[in-house]
Length: 107
Length: 121
Image 1 (cartoon, rainbow over the protein chains, first blue to last red):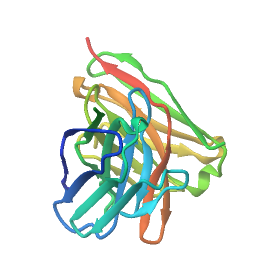
Image 2: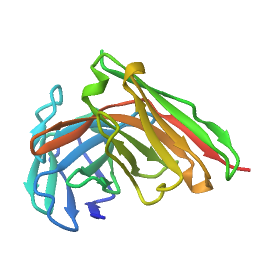
Image 3: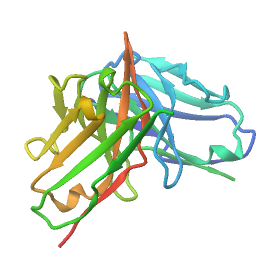
Image 4: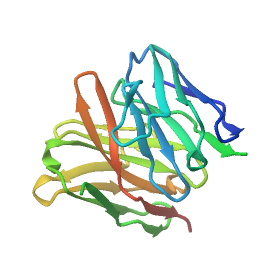
């Protein structure tokens, strides 16, 4: 199975900060990489698909980049409502795997 | 609106069985691949199973292969997960999710609200 290593596992940042979360795949997954946001007690919500495509309705402060094995989710200007857990998901083969998650706290 | 609603979760003893359902509405269910994903309490997400539009192609995570069976009824707009030989480590919230699949890209959206399965004696 493809392993997804996500970092950091947690971070704390202030409103207005630029925040970066990374995922590394154990083998090339080209651009079959999605990013999800999950708030407590809620189902995950897709933010980015195909590594860099912004899902409709998602604020433009969210962006994704990368290909092959290294991927990044960036929040350009952190907002209070961005407090959540973020996961990456590879969909390259039919044995999908998630990253471990990043718990983002607003200072 | 596009909606997925899971049901069937509950408390079951180790070795027991449970059948989860996911009712879809607001879209043409038969056009979409579907998946089950689970999340143990306080833990990350784990993909469980995938089923193609007709049910002809199915995949499972190693952790559930041989014990869980995914199926769908396109006439009833419903997805199912039959879970047998349940173990304590199967305790989790189980989500169904629609998979959108186009050339070179696929993603899960939306997800249902989840149904909690607790395996305990």
